Amino acid sequence: MVKDIGSFFTERGFGGAPVWSPDETKLLLNTYKGANLDSQDVMLLDLKSGKTTRKSHNGDLISSWAAQDR
Image (tube, one colour):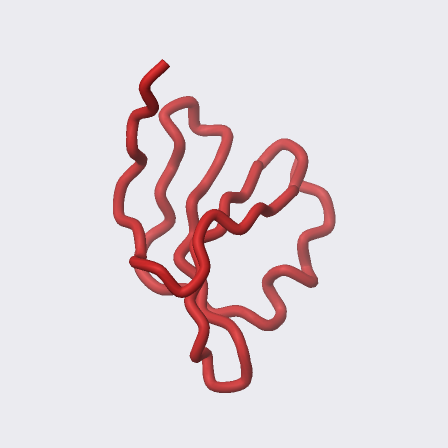
């Protein structure tokens, strides 16, 4: 169950489709924020905890999940 994430969504707009993690427990979201939606970030949303983490600030938007080397 996703916890209260209402404050995350109130001041943001979204661009493009969300990107699911391979295990389907997280989403990468292209977000725009600010009065004129002039700042773009990529946010990671953990669906279990409801926690969001900014992964990039004013960088390129994402369209796929990248594999990590171990």
